[in-house]
Amino acid sequence: VSYDVLGDVVCGGFAMPIREGKAQEIYHRMSGEMMALYAANNIAKGILKYAHSGGVRLGGLICNERQTDRELDLAEALAGRLNSKLIHFVPRDNIVQHAELRKMSVIQYAPDSKQAGEYRALAEKIHANSGQGTIPTPITMEA
Image (cartoon, rainbow, N blue to C red; front, side, top):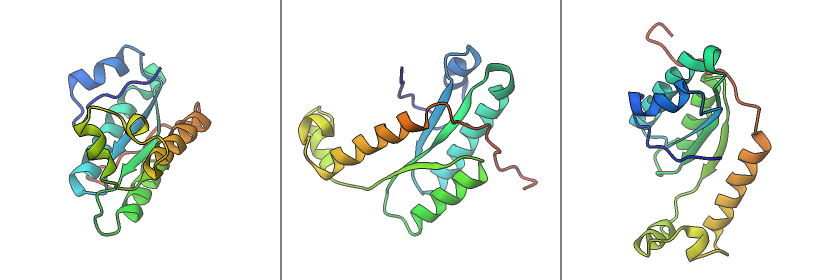
């Protein structure tokens, strides 16, 4: 079972499913912008807090491209620093906004589009990675 949970900050609402053992593997969706990288590190801290008692693992990072400088490099570097991997780099495509305006997913709106193919590839990568999550090593002030 997969859940898409808003988790820009590690707060009680986000941590509760982890504490209760409902999360086994977390895939964090982010971008290469600095605040998104910061939030990804904070999510890793939350996962680490419960990794030994609840068994939760970081499955990997998924980068939604925002077309910032060196975005792919930054996402891959952060994933490596967190003892994880970049599962998929999702290219930016305005077809997402066109689908949202129609209250549809990209797969529904344009099933044969390149972007729909990206989402299918992402799903396949998550499925193939199942059970291979890691205990993250978040960046600290000392690092």
